[in-house]
Amino acid sequence: MKTLKTLVLLMALSTMLFACKNAPKEEKTPVGVQLYSVRGDMAADFYGTLKAVKEMGYDGVEFAGLFGNSPEQVKAWCEELELNPISAHVPLVDMIADIDGVINDYKTIGCKFIAVPYVTEERRPGAEQFEETVQTIAEIGKKVKEAGMTLVYHNHDFEFKTLEDGTFGLDYLYETVPAEFLQTELDLCWVKYAGVEPAEYLRKYAGRAPIVHFKDYFFEGEKEGDPYALIGLEEEASQPATKFEFRPVGCGVQDVPALLEAFKDAGSEWIIVEQDEPSMGLTPMQSIQKSICNLHHLLCPGECCKEDKDECCGDCKNCEEGGCCDKPEE
Image 1 (cartoon, helix red, strand yellow):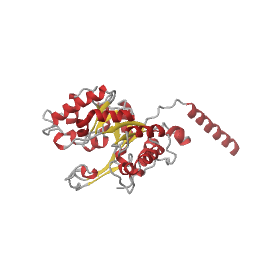
Image 2 (cartoon, helix red, strand yellow):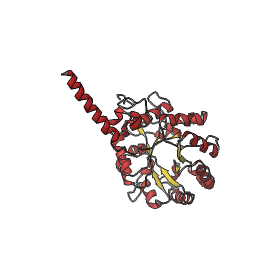
Image 3 (tube, helix red, strand yellow):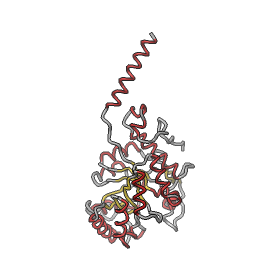
Image 4 (cartoon, one colour):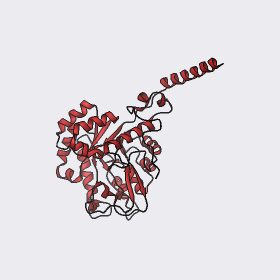
């Protein structure tokens, strides 16, 4: 009797594996990392960090400076490592000073996108230079398009300031600058932190959101102080009085499965992991390792990945079945 039960079980398992192997495969969702997340490592060993990022399973990178390396050398390293040089964050002041040079550098590397990463207080919605900044971005976007590349805007939470007509500053920017000159690079951490539902906001820009920053965080208490003090962007800012910390994707407050569905609905091309500062006792490199492991686990199409992780889940060979990040009890 036991032999019969064993035979039946083996036949059922064989049928399941055969169906799994022959089922149509979902197209792999490419995942990149914003190298600002590991800027200390990049400064110490640019090539070694790129190599480690590739070995983690990342498909591409988004630059935040070249750390003294020539565009030609960076291009060669990306080609050697088979890393897609997706995009680059370039300070707006640098684009204003020499947009032709910026375009030349990142086009040489092979980047498809150039991003406005941040604007200073006087350029933000409601401030004195906001309108001028919107027009400047439009002009830069035209030049970038003429070069065969695409300009994108990476938001924080301050772009969700409501203008006099009730419009968010970020929406005003995208309403004013035509899509052909400016696409979105929504940072879903700051969308949520601003009090806006990130999955629905991403869907709002379907067809205009080619690259999306997947960033997770933990927040507790009332919003006081300035969270940008955590990432060194506001020299005079004091640390927030409440608990705020960036987390690996899947280890914080974000509903990552819902965001992945919205990513697909929006027709987006690239997930970009970003973690401005490490937390949970991890180094920056350990943090982005957790993020890619969790994303690979969540992107696996169904139960089949448990039978063949390498085939279904990419290169994340060390993931446990539940993913790589068990959320700690708060």
